[in-house]
Length: 494
Image (cartoon, rainbow, N blue to C red; front, top):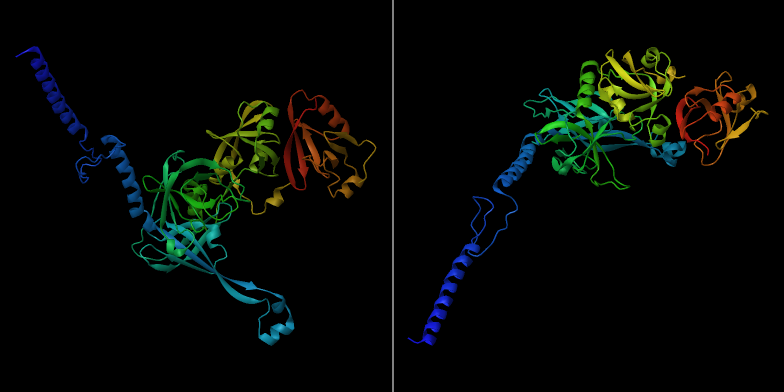
């Protein structure tokens, strides 16, 4: 065989070998990838992309199963509450005696039934249900419907508007109930599920999932005490009083409010009352019919950056005392205006709402240690908590003169009988009077300046001397307006 023939044979052999090798590896690479072992095998050549390793996939399946278990085990304990009340609808015709007599309309107007929808959670086999006060308040008829379609009339055991908690009760047999967890142990970022009746009764026992977005939210909800749990689990009108549960299926909050940006629907910002606080309120309402709320007896306001600088604080936290009520535990213990409460026992105070929550969680008569900062130094005050008084108001506390002066955008003068009469204040009040203030000032005419930089002020001379002696960038001014006292933080004039 000549050389040329040998080259041709070798070339053919190489081509054949390449074809065999290519076919072999092509078959290996087209072998399908299966995510689940029991997954139906795809047809030849089909590729199923796997996002998880087997161990990771097991974790995902376990998480999925956890929410399935929550729906199975907790949802039956969540109830739909329908509250009916009768309201009068007065109009011109109902107010006019002739029309009332002619048409037979009763005095005060026509009566019309109004219904409201909410949710609740059965918490024990006796039929006690936790819900929101605003769900059942003023309700003349309260109906409770379970997941298994059973319906009951409910009675109100007790309500607490300050925490928006209410306890109602039904009489039934073999009632499902939720297991109570601990909101204190709850961590930001944990998975949670919300269960309730959003918008309509036919959407009862809707379950949504999300995470704990934040804890200790201090919301401006009027006179409400709360250090709320924030979640992005979907909560809508009708969910109020429903359950917020952790991944174990434990009840850790009672859904109560949403942020809507002007609308009515969920935008991923919902709030729940911590179950630790709800448990105490529920226990008091069941045992005593009222809440035995602990009380310190101070007025409070938030610490901002400027206030922190004025007090040489390293951290912006705690709560500023702007009033000490007469006869209160705070007065007996020696707390004073300008004190900054930073700790209750061993718990650091984050803000005003957190401090209110910590005290509300205590028992009347319980002894606590309050750590405060006064004049840059830490002090500990021991006190026995009293019961919240029924009437807090009972515990509360003329022409410009020639010596009127102007500083920091305000005019002030000493309190004279004429000035006291003009501004309707007590002529024996200590401090100096604000008679005028610039439009953008935080002061108002009639304000009484009690202290500047924690120094008592009684005369215009003292006012000028204290201002002159200010040697820091920010300082605080204690102001009394009506029956309220509060601090205003000012920046020193350059």
